[in-house]
Length: 160
Image (tube, rainbow, N blue to C red; front, side, top):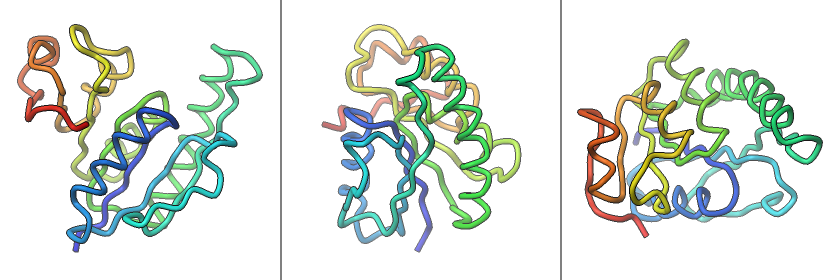
């Protein structure tokens, strides 16, 4: 049974990554790393063996908070990958996806998938544009996005 790291921020991104876990339940050993917002503290998901939290400093100042969160998350993912040793990484974004993909690509070289948000109908998100350079595969949920992501992109329909 493969060990899969699921990574997402809270909200719609989390909903989508949990839908992936529900679809693949029983086939893989999942653990989740989510942005540490109060609303998701103590999160319990039947399909997920363990839940970890990445730092979130957004409330202090938007641009600097996001940067601080991403820099702190690099260390979080380094330690988490060494501890859990995932075979695969699946992420839906947003900002938390980038440090996870970067640590995975630079140090652990495990296959990775970035799933673009369902809300992106015509153009890619900023996270998606950056993540597509770090991920091995990119799944889009609308055919119009295939042209933006190039040969890495795959369309298999909508997740939700």
